[in-house]
Image (spheres, rainbow, N blue to C red):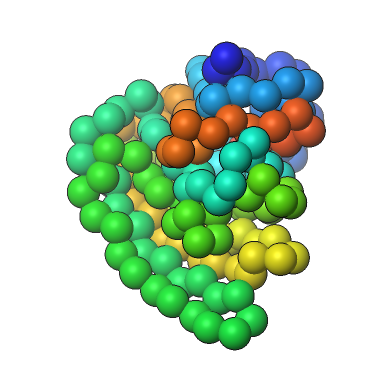
Length: 179
């Protein structure tokens, strides 16, 4: 069952720079999580994820504004202590935030931090930076691009192998105001 979250609590003070606007800890497995009705009052967004799957290694993917057109691309660098690889994924219907080699695992929780820049700007494409790592997998860095000038009002995270996020996985999105 997919989970949809909407704002609760809103800004934590008039002068906050880094404000939690959504937070969800799963109490049961789910196929996806959607952050909807994202306020456009911030400059950037920071998405912090600690997640585990219920089946093998799988890729974490992001869809913006429920848009499944081929407007997503990413470039990645990943390392596991003995080797490093890099690659590019272009013209996809979702933004691949982690290739399956260093993706969501059923063995351990993986930490992700996704920075979404100028998400509410309606004159530029949306760029993102992802950093992730897990003790037994390694680390990775991604740059991502969603080639749309629409303001981001909805983000959906899922695992592309048909696996689920397990209970205990956490998802928090922060709004960042320009200083």
